[in-house]
Image (cartoon, rainbow, N blue to C red; front, top):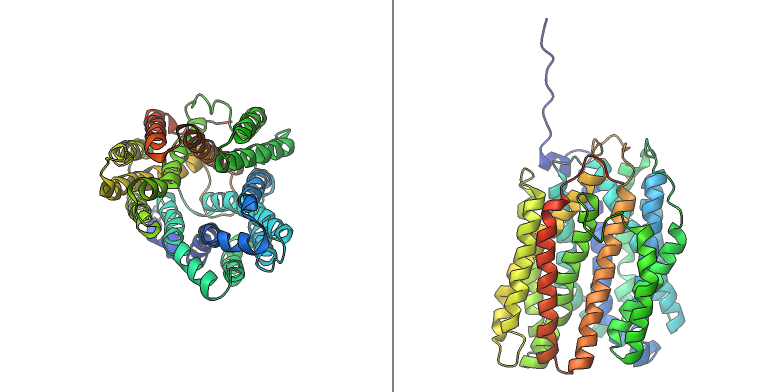
Length: 467
């Protein structure tokens, strides 16, 4: 009796860039990069856009419009992926996003611009969830940390080059090309992922219907949009709107996130809670750190962006490092990452006051960036480990059909946390007036948030079954 030959186990490199995988890996990175470039570039170009099409009072609306339909696209895209698989979403969502770029890029009125932003948000939300589902179907659990390292880099590079490129395009050509210039890349990304999704079958075990998802998605969109608007308008009206938004959001979230998320119940609920905690802590600081350095210490806008660049490099480097070590415990890496974010944020307490040491923001935010690279990538891997234990075989279908729902819940938690804590920062500025007084209070809240994330980290290990 002769022994059967054993097939060689594919390496992580083979799974990412081997025959039949290189195109889909590049396509995934490009899909994420497109959304990142658009978001980074729009923030830079928006003053010119509003100056041409509206007034300063209209400044928040293009951002609010994008946030609103991103939530809807995230929820509905996740539901479709669980029921039918990600094939159609991966083909249609970039098309909707591209149509939004075209509508916004040719806008001659504020109304047309807002219509384009609504389409962009809808496509970006659905596309983000579908990419997670595609990763679960195509890559093994062993290779996913490396994939999410690449996904992190897909956000970091646009954050470094997006704003200056958008600024140059706006100054020397027109803000219209900030939108239109991305259209060829949308078509290229779809062509790259097309071979991977062409023969993809629906899930073997489709998820059971979840009632009330559509009205809950609409309610969440209105609530998150109101929170975002309130954060940009720290007035009495903004405070009232924020309270009303939370009143709408709480019941909607009961439908849109796994049971036990608020209590960080062990398993996928703790992973979703972790996404809210890490996003709330890290991204809120990135929103207010430039203000801290310009208003309190008199730095120029370009100089105030240096800590964000350093943090992005730390994020990218740490994400790549963890991707090369799939054998490491993801809950442990998450805990280390949360503690590093807490350390970097707490250190900024010596930067925020008028007597503070401004240059310390550079090494401190490098530490926080490393923490984000370890923590965010680990959460992404844990999300799929708890959602699709039998996926990643490369056969085009997954027995577990919860990836879309869990991915949409995690992204919604991310969006809600950012809107809530950025809004809190705006409220503190309204009450305490000066950044030198208000921002230290906000930093203390965010340190507590990151420490809570470190406490939750051990609970993120996958359970045998998750709802």
